Length: 297
Ligand SMILES: [Zn+2]
Image 1 (cartoon, rainbow, N blue to C red):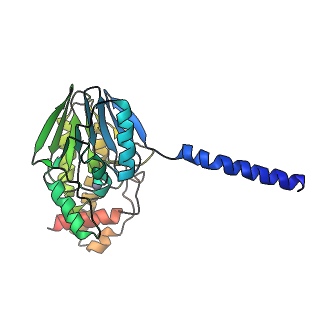
Image 2: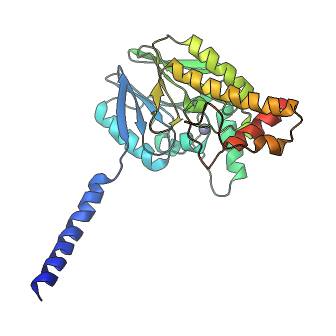
Image 3: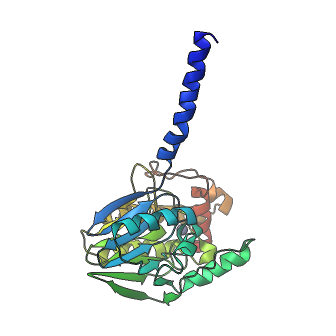
């Protein structure tokens, strides 16, 4: 074996020996970020999980998917010896409830708006396979609260928005609000009209929420354009509200001009919102279609 060949082979061997270890280190196990007073958020895959981990209470808001839910639970168990007292689902979508089976039997209570288990069951019927049967069993029609040590968690339903069962979750002492998917921070949001969502009421919800909680509340968002992040303040709620209003206005003007639904939907981005993230899975056209249907009913 000549020297060149030897060097090449040994460096490949070395690379081979190091690479799996490196990729193991780089393997994403999710990120925990503290927001304020034992309340924070976890991101890995799916909707942002909110958490409380204090010496006398543990809660999670949303559950992502089974793998990331496990990572989240493991990480939280490193933060406190408390058992998990509560899981809240902000709404029924799979990227917010997919990890429920991991929390079932671990969490003392699983809570959500009363439409959430119904919409989960409907989604199961419409999909092939087993589906997710880890339904939240503590339900409410308007609001609900639970004391967890020195923190109180409030959940409130403000009517149809992103779906027909969105809750806003408020950690009172930390003054942190989890919005679920009522805010896609600087993103064209998914609007689930077949599940009872309403773009018009969604706009109202964002105004109501901004007035409902203290002006210095910190908000956690279900999804975000990466540069803008999954937390913010009430000004970010306004941006989402203005975006949805602009979608409705654009559709309304088209209707008044006698344009067809297809003509109204033929648009890639909205003026003044070019900096938004327009993802392929749900486009501005899709939202203009929802707005058209809602305005025409
Ligand atoms: Zn959603």
